[in-house]
Length: 139
Image (cartoon, rainbow, N blue to C red; front, side, top):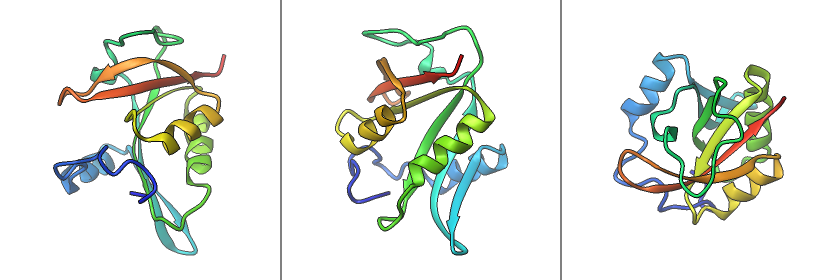
């Protein structure tokens, strides 16, 4: 994870190697390479996302159509343009994308909003941790 992001967002060994391997085995784990070197990882997972079933203090832009969720974005500190590349790929797969982040991860919030996502409310992870939830729906 980038040192400039929220170092407290992921704790207790999350995401573990088994979580990443499960993403890959399901066909949902992706790497970004630059000059033959892996510089980033992310998961793009088709709906439904159980932790998105309930949203507080707002609502999803569209709660009827299938969507994909972006999870577990991590990159090397010297990488640039990773979020742009992830967005380009995600929206080539689906025009309805959801993403969430920790309230203290200002860099991720900035990138999410810069890419046209709308803040929709708060979701809670299975652990009970709170996350800010966003959606971008291309109609």
